[in-house]
Amino acid sequence: MPTVKSDKLMKSVRSGEIAPIYFFYGPEIQLMRNTVDLIVSQTVEPSFEGFNLHRYEDDALSAGELKSIYETLPMMAKYRCITIKNWNLDKLAKQDLEQLISMLGNPNPSTVLVLYDTRQSVEPKKNAKYKKIYEAVEKNGVVTEFSFQDKAALKKAVLNRCQKAGVTMAPELCERLIEQCGSQYAMILNELDKLLCYAGENGTVTAQSMDLLCVSSIQNTAFDLSNAILKNRYEQAFSILDRLFYLRTEPVMILGALSSSFLSLYRVKAAKAAGVSNEQVMADFHYRSKYQIQKLGQDLSRFSLGQIRRCMESLEKADRLLKSSRLDNRIILEQMLGEMMAAR
Image (cartoon, rainbow, N blue to C red; front, top):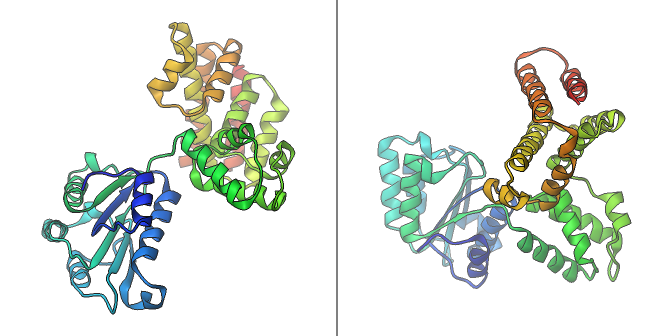
């Protein structure tokens, strides 16, 4: 069976097309979990979960133990289901790896095996052991990479959820919600559910309710922070940082998102100097938000490339201090902001 995209996979599982083996990976964790749960619900009766459902995580079992369970017949049912989350296949000894590949090459028709990895560092095609597992599953089962959904798919999911809840939402507000929450499917649906509860059945999602209830992703908040620095809005910049600490956002996440925002700024500035369009920048670096790139482009005249470089040096310095210094993390980030404002 070939590699299958996540949307087609969900449809096939719902229709009762069950493969003997699945291997999932990628950054869209919530969709991956939803798919694993769907496979479980389609293959195991709730009353027989104690007999026919086996869930494991990390390195909780060896290849030999898995083989023993895998070859056991289900109890009064068509399928036995085994799910293994984040099994570090790279640590398998040669003998265990060969045993696992042999098992994947001869699937048990009465057992459904789901290997799924929520660690974003996993890249099966670039790791020798994972690549062997990938190829073995691909021959007899289904491999799916759960990548971030494109804007059209996210918009469709949001509007479908609104329709099921009996709530009206304007397409422009749907797009705003996606822009505000970023590309994480789970965060979008979490914020949407708050809006739906607030609107109530036969209600309407409004811009006011979105302002009141929804939070931005760390990436979008970092964009607002970088925008405040660009415009020399001292109080706004420190107010955003204060809110991030109030929300208990990890300092490393704040710094990482802000660094990403300034890297984008540098790219757009360099592209503009070279006569390259924003659309080409989006295509070259796989940006999803056209609004943010356009917004950065509008504010570029406020900073020179040299000033952007000095800001990035302040970010790099803060990164080193966060990882090696005993200074208070908040002081480190506040000092960084002060240096970046001075560069402005």
